[in-house]
Image (cartoon, rainbow, N blue to C red):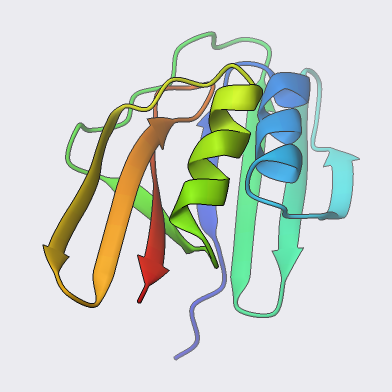
Length: 120
């Protein structure tokens, strides 16, 4: 079995695309209409794929508080500076649970926790 992607329901496709492209660094793989008022965008390549689904008929998305998507970064300090520069608040952290890992969280435009992790 092979993992394909994570699907995220989003309230605003453009706002979500901006976040995942500018902050996470994912590129659009494909984007298409999937029926009246429904748009789907796949981002990423290789093993990192995210599917964003925007349905104009539904303005609500619900993510549990205990779920997050984690992304490895080269420098936690540089990533923290980038998110602050883009006007994104740090949700929590930074944390360093052991000498080899440190991380922090932000929220994406839909309220999903995004974890940035630096392996030291």
